Image (cartoon, helix red, strand yellow):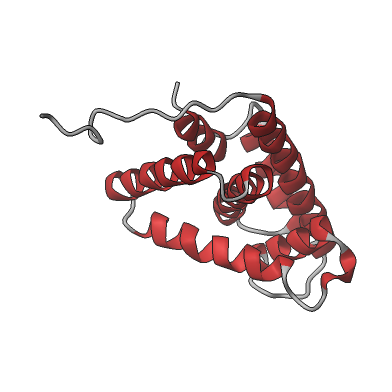
Length: 168
């Protein structure tokens, strides 16, 4: 199986019981479930992207995985909703800015969590923001660690796809 496709599935497909848990949590926190689910998908995309950078740096393997990862996202965007790819790019920038912000004293998990809560609450200072920040930070760090462990624990073999080869 292609690694980039597996990573896209990790981002797009919720875990078992996740949708029910998010429904209950969204109701409890007074946020729109669809908005929170969508933001979690973008947060997972950032976790995968950030983990690949941290685990593989500028290695050709990371560049190949990233290229295919984004190609899959472009395909999803074409088939489902044209704005998905642009929204994901916006969120990758948003979360990258969050980790480089001046409020960096809180630590990476807290910074990402606060950024997630801000997106879900649209910047509102309401009750439940702390819970959303904990959810976002926890989801980010869990997936970041899993993807980092995966990328560090396997041998990545680059290959030329049939579309990349030139017939002689």
